Image: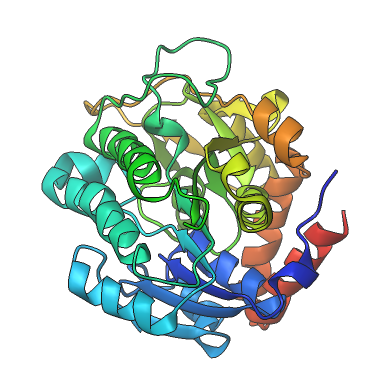
Length: 354
């Protein structure tokens, strides 16, 4: 099983969009801990508390608040930094919000990706680009097996559709502008339902459950039978880092789409996850079904990660039961006033030792 090469990242200049988000904060910590020089470009954190603030991410890197919907701003920021590696994670990441804000969702996820990749064309030292999308890019047939990277793009809702469009944008830029031997190698990465400590995002199962449990209230659930590919945040991030390493070292051989998801046994129903959360929390923790009409969401979704296992020697490390335990431990330490930057960095070290 391959590990992230810490020596590779030392001294690398990494431009990271979306660094103020949940996944971006964890990745910023990880990159900084390995000695990378990191510049982030993103909107202000949209939750309070926010992982970005709690673990003091900005103390470890250069942080610029900006909007990828503004081509001039993102181009100026990226070109002035002159990165070796670009990881694009900025997005509008929520399905239900995309129903309320479809224009903003497409503007961020589609044209934002166009802007980031267009800016990348003017960076002379850039050698590797990882554009992060989602497991929801696939035309979901609700079948029982996992989707492979060559399955058709689709998307019922504006979020899923916009991310499928971002994949098409990435493929077009790769063929049109990043196909020469001296151009950056561009790949896309698709992950499952990412969970972990420090996630206070709106309209997500585990943050909603923790908030409800803390108030002594039942968590209200829309679709308990939906099955998702749950995984700890460090799992796909390790895949993004390994992919970037391979792009940097071997170029076009790895300039494709890649899935990073959990093992099949960790694809669980919402109901199963909730029962685990209730058991782990104890006390009067509970959940109940939301009887109100809900917008469409996929019932079953799973990724086939055979390609990442064979091509990158990447494998998930933590089983879902352990992930849930780690999430509660993280939030318990936060509530106890611990130094969460130190705690989170230790969690990354623990993961790296496996």
